[in-house]
Length: 256
Image (cartoon, rainbow, N blue to C red):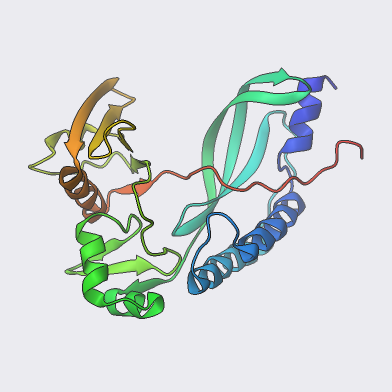
């Protein structure tokens, strides 16, 4: 076994037992609630979602992956957890560690969603007024909220918005088209990435991309414009927030 394969076998998940062991450590990390810290009720609900996901994995029949460069991966996506079947490529090794790798999600195998709350239920959970929650929604601050008819539902795993702006990438699902008169280029996008200008905190940059057609464009937006943009994306129900870098338990001791 060469060093590349050896490191790959040390770092990734290949069996149901691997997944469950890793999830056990992930839940411990969630309960510690260190960084970033969540409010008490949100921590309980995040752990509850993890436990629902673990129960789904335990019920599943997952083969041991023996084909090289294939592995299992789970993600906490804010309002749901997913188990994916992935394939690795272009693996680079430096100082006896994998320093770079291209990873492709070939199939999503299991998806478990959190519970959703009405505006009144969500405001009661966080101890704020319903009008405050509606203001967060109008300003695109609750990125995992969804429209249900005329009403809004918010994940019980979503905390109150943090101060300042956090960069975000939205992925348009199932080749859908987001319609917006103010932001018409949304209709051609597969990906929308928004970040704050480091030198001017009142300026925001939005990158609009379609990888199939190789279309890409850039918008410069004010704070109020970016809030309306995010509200339009969230209200459409056609996009999800791309998963962020998260804690990954290390399962194996290289000395074993």
